[in-house]
Image (cartoon, rainbow, N blue to C red; front, side, top):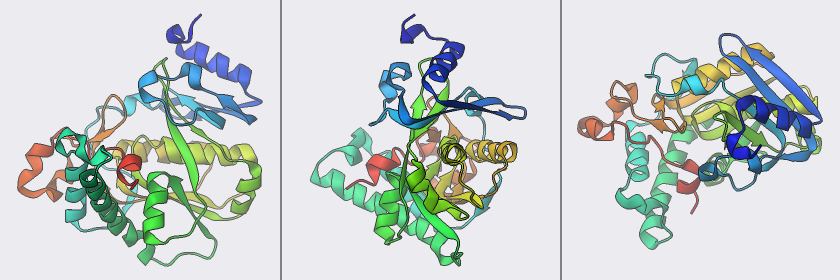
Length: 300
């Protein structure tokens, strides 16, 4: 049977065949999250949507689950997030550039570069608030490539960057891929990891990091995440995974709100608490992306 016609069960079976180890995490009231591991890597390209292909498709840890699907199209609500306030104008600048007419900010032109620099400045200014708190001696900053790493570089924050790719499967599930060799992971032993991101959308990035750590067998104290923008549904999903898998940690954010569209991008909801930061132009942002592609827009 061709990959185009694979069902969710067939994708799970095919990846299980390619993995050295398969872990199943039962998330109460959500379902099962599958964690596939092979130290030589698992090629996911045959199972992914062509319109959402990441730059790399081979990972030593691959997550697949339909538990992410119900997160879409849900009105923003309360979320287990610690708020670290930033100036509202930063959110306005970020969204305005992300939704620039004609996608000018994404173009490789002098004007596009100018817009991306302004976008990165606003993201970094918001994220700088996280580093005003005392950093624990056991804390390791883990910037997520590309957006989190670009922010860290702009702020001069040292850390151990990791790349995590969101995976959109042809069978309808969402997942993530990450390469975390044990030779790198041992640097996290008995440490508190703080991921640095631009946005927490579905929560798949933080969950992938925790799943990969579980695969390496190392001990850590916790995995937390600092992000400029956190979608409530993604924060709740991450918290539920933590509880089901025994990880400690918290989500911290400058701004909390938005809903996930059918492609798991964060957009403004008509009843979104984020819109109070947008002033008189709030209505013009309804259903617009909150921050666009943070990786592209922070890359100069």
